Amino acid sequence: MSRPANVAAALAAKHCEPERVVDYLAPGADVIAGLGNAEPKTVLDAIEEHADGLEDVRIHQMLPLRERAYINGQVPTLRHVSWFLSPHDRAAFAAGNCDLVPNNFSEVPRLMSHSTKRSMVVAACAPPDRHGYFSLSTHAEYVAAMIGEAPFFLEANAQMPRTFGENHVHVSQVVGWCEADYPMIEVPPREGTDTDRRIAELVVERIPDGATLQAGIGSVPDQVLGMLGDHSDLGVHTELMGDGFVDLIESGVINGTRKATHRNTAITTSALGTQRLYDFVAENPAVELWPVDHTNDPRHIGREPRATAINATLEVDFLGQCASESLGMDYWSSSGGQIDYTRGVLYAEEGQSFIVLHSTPHDESSSRIVPELHAGAAVTSSKNIVDKVVTEYGVAELRGRSIADRTGRLIEIAHPKFRDQLDRQAHEIGHL
Image 1: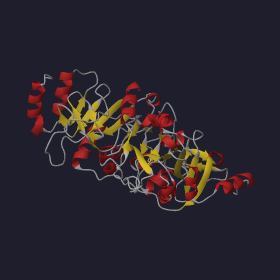
Image 2: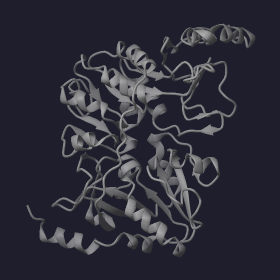
Image 3: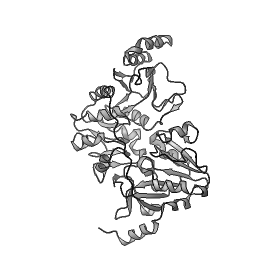
Image 4: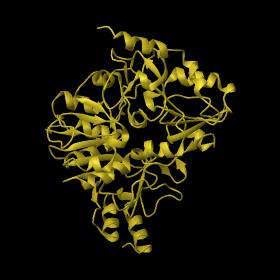
């Protein structure tokens, strides 16, 4: 079906080459770039290529999926500001070539509105439909939250699927758009180990039918999803949809019938996985992508009965504090949405949160249950909101427990080779 003449004219008037974006970047501009596959490759290429004509431009982004010269401090007029580290800007941050902004994922849109000029939003999207709307495809996050609040320059990638939800931008809301045609980056599920599977088994046996799920990044959450095939009437309200959700939706295990909001629909703010996932969400009315200040708002999460959150961490101390983004001063990522969901499920009727980790690194050289976190470690989930901590040796239920009780429970799920040492340390510091 052809486009109405007025829509076709509006699209034609704003269609341009990607380098036109630099015309809108004044000195000191703050550019907001989409995360993951919402990163507009050709537009950022053009900004880098024409950087000599720019002055003091900051590009704000979460989870970049490509190596770039400006991220590594090689383009003097551009500065990368990370809101969540990935393998492509982790070393740059450690070397001082980019900045990192602490945040909870749910608050990123508001924080960006207060701390940046929001001079331009640049994002990849699906091609416009006959009504003149661009779908932000497999992403919503902070970009969708800025629709109508900031100027947009879009890259319509022919290989990005059109999706539903609050993630559509009308041609009248963009200053320009260009076309591209390149494959989306795939992030396949991680291969699970025996330890991952044992931890997942402990979580799965505690998930009831009718639960509404959030599963974070990591092999254990992936394994949990793979073991839920005998459950029924599950729902999805998550920040990230990966491949593990597809089989459960297609088999009817996930149907959303017991959800309090968005019934019969899987709600997410990101879809990141393989081409199978991207094909699955394409024009699928059972999946909706919403801005992160909706999906990750603890008040919304807490409305779902049996809301269940599954997230990974790197280290847990005797108080129950979780360091999920750094080991000491060695930053790995950022807070993301872990605290949003860890807190949100506590407001839900029969809600529960699982923080999962291996009891040791692969070489069993140290315990990841520790008396105190590494010096300089960032506390991601605080002791007051952590519910259940799970290793391959068991589940420590911490909510409402005393410090002594918490300490004892955590030592019980530590690796056996470290339990005596941890017990001695607990007595030395007065926890036991």
